[in-house]
Image 1 (cartoon, one colour):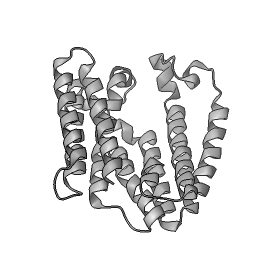
Image 2: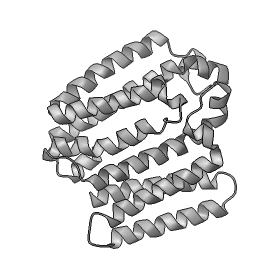
Image 3: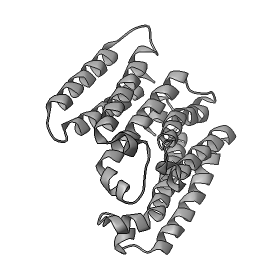
Image 4: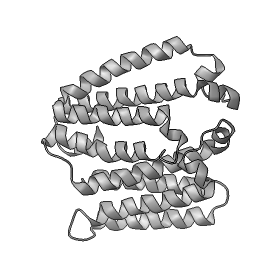
Length: 242
């Protein structure tokens, strides 16, 4: 929604994009909880209502179905091209839920979805594909986000047989790889669109450098928080430079 607004989309288009994105993410998130229910029970996850029995499976399945109807309706209301592409991105999220997250290709749906989203918005608002640099920046951001997001749950995942890319790399190397990918995304975002660095680009690079240094010097979860900070800088820079 924010990206659409920065591209001067109409209020109706912003609303439809928001509804399509929200309902699509709900179908992916709820499907993931359904698929992981038994695994979460074995891992003793108290933060998962399905695993604790606080939420009935039938309720979640019904919610997925309702959200899917909303996703299809809102997506196709954007137009045939952006709508079809958005539904393909949602399908990539389901592919992650249904098996890819247990493989070395666990990063791929994140790269596809984050990289494809600017294209959906551009097709819906401008009736033309997004610039390639936004796709590249989005894909780098998505892959880095996947590595960071998986780190807190690595041990629980290993106990239940999940062996995605972050699990094969381990926590330390996942954070290192995420840092590199996110910094690459920063460089793409601030250096490619214009004719050199402007104030936004310089500020973004300095902020990322400071976060990287702080993360390396701070014990405990400092690196994890620093990578999250770099991801946030990338998102803000992408919105400002789009």
